[in-house]
Image 1: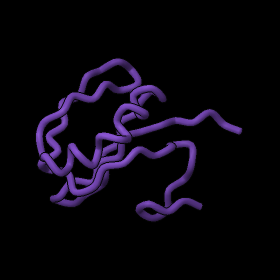
Image 2: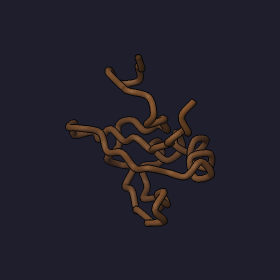
Image 3: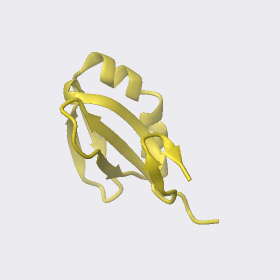
Image 4: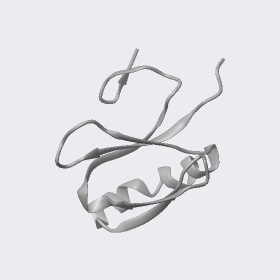
Length: 81
């Protein structure tokens, strides 16, 4: 079995391709429980990526946010083959 490659997936309210940010397993665990709160509040939150970069994300522009495993091939939003 391949190692998991967690990523933060953001679908912007304006449409377009989703934004993907590779995360550590630890960071993905921290974010998973907070994403609903971040999108509801619509504030700016810092996220630390897998390569230790800090990205400020303005959740006021995000329509959907979730943690996904990049080792799986996504064919349709939220569905995997």
